[in-house]
Amino acid sequence: EQAIEAAQMREKFGIKGKYLLYIARIEHPGKNHLGLLKAYQALPRHIMNEYELVLGGGEWNNAEIVMDYYAKMPQKQRIHFLGYVDNGDIAALYQNASLYVFPSLYEGFGLPMLEAFAAGVPVICSNNSSLPEIGAEAVKLFDASDPQSIADCIENVLCNAPLQLQMIFWGKERLKSFSWEQHAKRIFESLEAQSSGS
Image: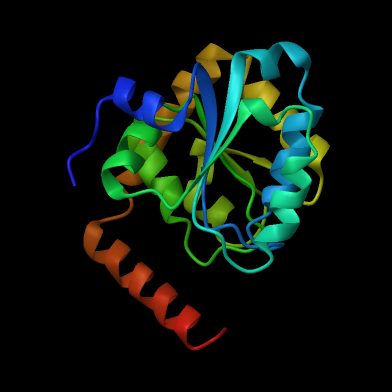
């Protein structure tokens, strides 16, 4: 699908300014949306005022726990749950994000990380499962079980423009380590593992 224009994408999803992005099915606790919502609440007010939080992905296991928490948040007008997003919209979402936040508690292979690298977006992620290995020096890590750790990592990167440029550069470099052939094999293995229920 053809990528849509940034302005169209913003209008479609009601995104007004700069934003933090996370794309994952809403599955609790695995994908850790709750941790990210709590981290967003813990951000200094000036950062929250400047950056919205955008979450793309369909509802999955225990999504209601996440949505119930969101419904009670005073900041909810700054947070966008987009539901399932098609490929054309996803490309525009990545390209216009200020930061990709990957707070998953378990991840087989972090495909969104590579998509963010390709779009030239700095990535911060959990210090667990495969993510630190895939991101290597291109990512900054946080403790996904601690919303304050996530918030601190968001703040550190957003308040440091030279660091962001360095992370974008290293992300593009890191991408070169993943040939599409190798990449397709990892995705296939990850899908097989998921379908066998592991």
